[in-house]
Image 1: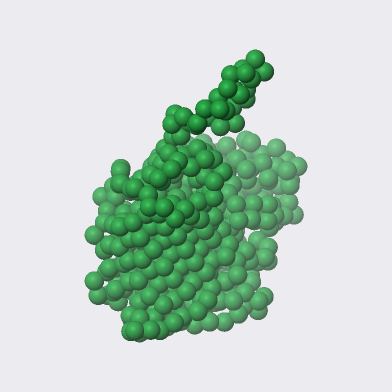
Image 2: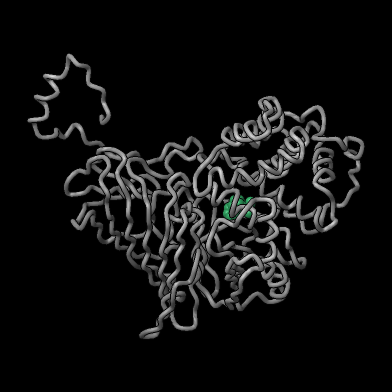
Length: 494
Ligand code: TRP
Ligand code: ZN
């Protein structure tokens, strides 16, 4: 409707229209999805969020979460109504101060109709008062809110936000956050970024967290429980906040022996990826029984199971690599997941080489040889794997193999310039696989279409390994580094 070009002949009619009050026909509802073909209902159309302010209270004994979300946004079309993605029970919504009517629709849509329609380009403040027991709410038959004996954790991909705050739930709409959570004295509440302050009053302690750089909804985390919190600063000057559940049992030592190296590993990765993009770093290990780790921005989530066999610096490297590849530079659509996982896996290969546990080329040769041509591994196209294969092992391993192939094609100088330049090129934004290909072509001055097609898109094993080292590709007996993350084996799939 807006930005219509008016032909000169229509001018008289157009100026006539100006005298008439805007007709109801010019306002339309915002779309219930942002337009991602992998997840058509995720995110919403018609507005862009700049900031979430979440002021919450949580009772570990009953799993009751209540509070207020204040969302700052700007409309991107003339809107009669718009959606937020959310599952808890809403008692009141206000838009720019006025009570708005609301209803639910679909699996996770909160449909908000403001008292008066909103013109394109209007700054809006949306206040949502809500409460609920997150563990009782599902969408599509699943629930990713993880209860622990002493609290709960919100950390999942791509679905995590619906159980604890209303949002435009897609990485395309990143925003800054203030997350303030009151919990009973003796319990801690963790979230992303910097702990601005804590305050105890009337038996409750309120934790005020701030993430001052744009953050995708799925990278926003909340953990409530009894934690031991450690703080420090990396040699390179990055403040580090880590937290360990007081109930890690036998995993406690190995968890700390891994996650306490966060500062060292952030600095080491900066050598490859450039300056660390955020004002804080760290990780937390709650007493969950799920198996995975997740690159929640600045405050990585680690399952204790990641440390069940001893220290695992490799998983820390993987999740910290995502801070550049995935968190600062986020995907445009979920089909672009290689932008995240291929590079986080490649960072583990670089670490393996640093530790003397196999060079990147040896690991590439190993992966190539490990999967015979008829292995379904080669059917998965890391460049567009489909929603069902989004976190298939091929996105990680074939994805990293593609990166080694790129390195061999353009040479180390151009390759490491790309690796470091990319996080700067799209810092705090969004990018696609096609954007990466174009950037690598620009930096290397090489046409890379066939190489990307072969390694990321063809549903078959490439004829030649990514190498140089073809001769050692058959060394199937080469041991896999013990710390190598087996995402397909350890991840909880819902
Ligand atoms: N992105 C996570 C990683 O690579 C793995 C992951 C995939 C995940 N799907 C998930 C984690 C679902 C939690 C929930 O480290
Ligand atoms: Zn990952």
